[in-house]
Length: 361
Ligand SMILES: Cc1cc2nc3c(=O)[nH]c(=O)nc-3n(C[C@H](O)[C@H](O)[C@H](O)COP(=O)(O)O)c2cc1C
Image (cartoon, rainbow, N blue to C red; front, top):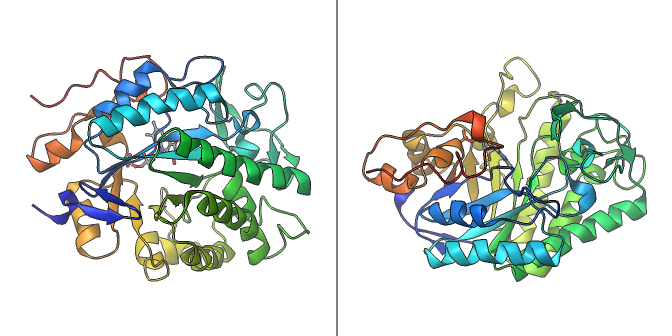
C-alpha cells in the first residue's frame, strides 16, 4: 500500500489519509433560502472516509449566486443547516472544509433577485451558468466600485467566520475557473486603472486581501484556495502574463500560513500556447509554493500515488469518483472496482444519484 492512504498532518489537523473529496456542486439545496438539507447531511456523512471533505461551492452572499440550488453561508438558517453536516461528518471521524465562492460576472440575475452581477470590469466572461431555465450564457456585469470591493471582501470574511461557527475545520476559497477571483487576476476581465488593476500586483490585491482577512479570522492552517492557472474558456485564454501572475500570487500566499493550495490540472490542450510551460501546473508551481498542495483533476489511484511519491503533491483530490463511491477510500485500500457516476444526476434528482450509490459489498 502506498502513501496515499496513510495519515498526514494538514495545517492544524491530523487527517487519516491523503484522499480529499473534491468540492462538487450538487444543487440539492432545493429551498428558496438555500439552506443545506437533510439529504446533504446524509450525503456528506456517507463520504466521511475521505481524509478531508471539501464541500460544494457555497455562496458568501445573495448577490454571489451563479448556480441554482447551491447552498449559502450568509444566514443564521444556513449556518444551522451546515452545523448538522459538520456534526455528522465529525461523528464518523471525518474532517470537512467549506468551499466559499462569489460567482462575480458569472452570477445570474435570475437568482440574485434581478440584481446585475458585479465584477472587476464590465466584461462578459462568456461562460454558461446554471439557471432555473438550465444552462444559460452569462451577461455583461457591472464594474464594482471601490466600496463594493470593500463590502465583498468583508462578505468573504463573514462567510469564513460563519463556517467556523457552523463547525467546519476550515475553508477553501474558490479561486478557480471564471468566478470573481480569477476575474480580478486576469487582464482580459480586469480593465481597472485603480489599485485593483493595471499590473500584476494590483490584480492580485483583491484575492490577497480576501486571504489575509480570512486567515486573520481563522488563524493559521485553516484556510486554503483552489486555483486553476491553466484553465482556458470564454474570456480566459492563454496569456504569458498569467503565468507570471500565479508565480507572484503563490509567492505572496507563502507568507500567510495557509492550510493548502488546491491546484487543478489543465482541462484542455494548451500545447503551442503561452501556457505550454504550465501544461503540468503541479511540477511548474511546486517549487514556488512552500505549503501543502492538493492536486486535483483526473487522478486515479496510481497517478495519485505517483503525485505524492514524487513529492509534487501532499494530498490528492477526487471528484467524480466520490459521487458514485461513498466508500472510495475503502475501495482503494482493498482494490475493489469503482462504480461510475451518472452525469444526469450531478445537479438534480433529489436523493437519486446523491445518497443512493451503495458501498461495495
Ligand atoms: C458535478 C460537479 C460539480 C463540481 N462543482 C465544483 C464546485 O462547486 N467547486 C469546485 O471548485 N469545483 C467543482 N467541480 C470540479 C471538481 O472539484 C474537480 O476539480 C473536477 O471534477 C476534476 O476532478 P475529477 O477528475 O477527480 O472529477 C465540480 C465537478 C463536478 C463533476
